[in-house]
Length: 398
Image (tube, rainbow, N blue to C red):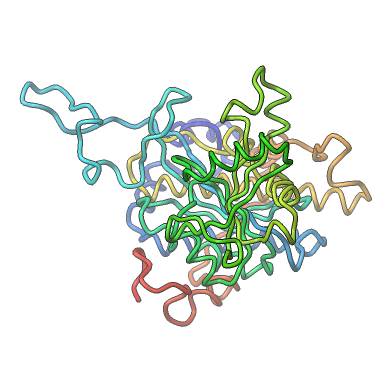
């Protein structure tokens, strides 16, 4: 069911008592169905499944009315073939020689790790700075362009559950499109920076060191790529030494890796620069949840089909939500804390998956033909015309 290759699942399921007198579903049947469905229908299915689980978390009092949310990009490593194309000698062409537009949709080059230099990227929105940082929605990124539409779509789904307070953005979203989208939604935000930093960041670091400051800030607008006079600023760059990194490293503030850099529309004079950094760092529970999701809930796949990759990723988020909801239900009904003083839930992800495999009767839910009948989010978001705030989403008809 998870952490194995879907092609191997059929043989593994044959050994379970549940399938002694039932036909075991074949992986080809699943993959063929995914191939035939369009992405919008599949995404509605994932949203409806997550909603049913999030409703349980809400019923037990762990879904706040207002909360910070985290919008993230997660790399799920891709182990597929580099190319089906061959050169004139009949040898496979190295992937680096293939134009980007001819490569599998959504697969991007990343820092090499875990034996692969390529990954497909999943954008997600989750509750942040709360005890149960459940993911509210997730989707694959088709191309890295149109970032503002990816953010707009995720915020639309998040609005169904909570009133966002501050949006903590993954550094992979940083840019003009991010700012314009969040401004359109009238939301406060904090974003990390990734890639090439504006030149003013170096000046802020030097000023912070020279004047022995806890943090340093300057008005800056990413939409024009320029520093802005303090009297006119509506967004800021903030730099501060990373105490955690410095404590673990042999180097100090002279190492550029020992600094935190944020872009935000929260005024550091009003909210406090250190408080802005602390609030962003509090989202660490979301990062921990993603690491667990990748390790315990993500099936292995080398498929080049976006529909299959999105299925694998969304099933991981769904399993993760089931695990959180099960712990909440168990803790509340047994008058126990949801987490102990070490931040551990009553039972582990592995215990959940084993329990599901050994007793599958309770998760046999049958078929639903019209999701809008069962799902509020499908009915309310997609029930009447174009669903998003920004016009021109590349994956949807206007």
